[in-house]
Image (cartoon, rainbow, N blue to C red; front, side, top):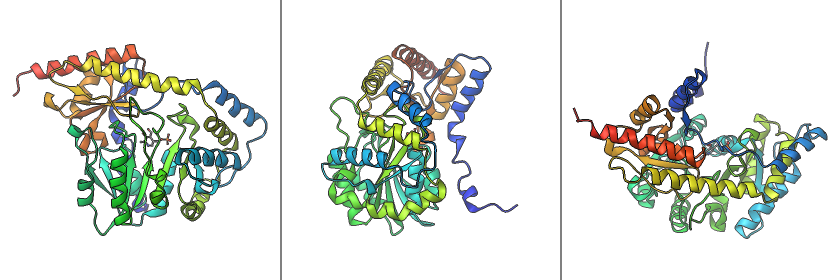
Length: 396
Ligand SMILES: Cc1ncc(COP(=O)(O)O)c(C=O)c1O
């Protein structure tokens, strides 16, 4: 049978990157006890009040067809949230409600990328980015972010990669896997480059609510001068521990939303009204559970780093945001992939190798902060134990 080229473009860009996580799940189903720190799935429960709204709205008949943009309530909630954030009026017609950030990324790239267009992305990058760019026919162009500079991207490095086919930049702040949050200076410099070369900025802000210490979240969308070229993608998956709800959105210019509306209609013909209502409620109200999640991620990150500190073979830096810590294993002489495999085999801890996030992640492990402090501390002991064992082995 004949298959479309997209199936070739996506070969190897799907679940292969999660091979160690999948192996861990298989071992767990055979009865092995493992510590899972592999995927960015919040362990907290959905705030009860949000569950109640979803349940009530479903039972009250909000189960009919919606439309490609979203129900008026959720569009109003988004408008109010972004107007407050940016300090200017962001109209309800500047949003599309979509099933999660992942679909929002898909719609964003389908809306701006033609076959052969290049998309710049700071490397390391989230594991689905290559696939979602390739699905639209684009070519991902990684720009290495230096681990020794906290994975902060240099605007000069970015500028060097801009060519005649460059169409867009994919930013992710706070970053997965890096935990890096771009400063306002960095956003300004990157934004100036994008204006100069007339590039779109796709800004993945799914971790926007999770910043630590004095770190402040900054979005290019909040700069009026960058609004027309910025496409924000986000969701309540991480902020409200609702990944299974698949509730996310695009925030962009009215023109962009108008242009891609038929795409959303073609893919979905609308989301579930009762979930849109629950998301509107989530965004319009304040939940102590949401604050508690942020506090616990920060504590867990500190516990992990404290557990690793003092090792001669590995090191880790406090993330500025997000829900991951990158552990640098380069001094062990092992790749991130080899280290993660041995960690699973010898210490029953499941992590993601940095290499799953591009060459820029090489020699690192990504640790998700999705178990309690005690278990994180135990995982840190095991990671350190393996690192010391490897470091003590005579090199061949
Ligand atoms: C950077 C980043 N973008 C997007 C997603 C997907 O989020 P959603 O559940 O909203 O589709 C994730 C999930 O881990 C992520 O880490």
